[in-house]
Length: 304
Image 1 (tube, rainbow, N blue to C red):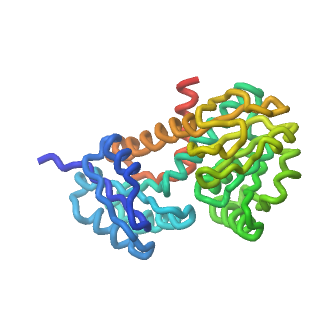
Image 2: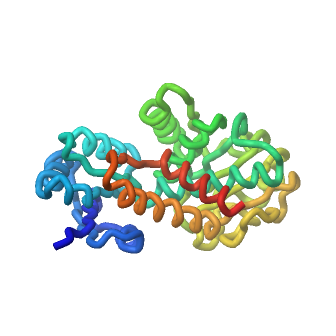
Image 3: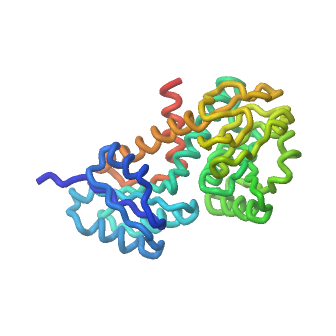
């Protein structure tokens, strides 16, 4: 009997995201098995149960997905999963906590497209504010952008928290190549004067950039908002924006809304889940936000 493709889906939360389950099955996994309230210390045992319970041939039809709600924790769990492998007993692992890695990848790839198409430039050297950026999407977007050469500041309501998150992103994910700064929301009125790009990654329904601040941004080029729930995170920008002008912008800035970002996010997550299946006979893959950005970029190029 042909053995099925089985994806073991691990999360530290009390529920596994139905979104992720649907995505896995739609990508071609036959079974998506949830494990909830998983402790990071349990990763080694769970992974080894998965790899040792099937023959080497059947094991290649096994994969592991890591969810949760914390960027660092998910990346640590990914590392633990990788270290738990015992060659030749190895399987692919994909981390995407709360869909944050693929969402961030989709957002940055969309912004990069607008920079190229509308302003004939790149992320390199641009000043970016990640407003409401202390969460998983803001963190991943900050790291992706900084690695592309941008100067990124994570902005939060509490200065100490924003600085802590920025330092964590720099040290944990930067590979010694980047420096991400942290700043308080109260100071964004000053910082916006020299900002090229804005990411709005706050909780749904919270406006992080007012019409007054949009109008006072003389060099703003692109703003992106992952929030699809009214009110918009950025005044003058709604979920349907896909490179059109932002109402009230004095610099000719264009916007990217949640629907455009979500479409690329969907394509990236789908492709990475399929990639795990397609590479089942080769070397195992350990996928995270950097791989999601590569796939998102390729998707946008293919539609360009």
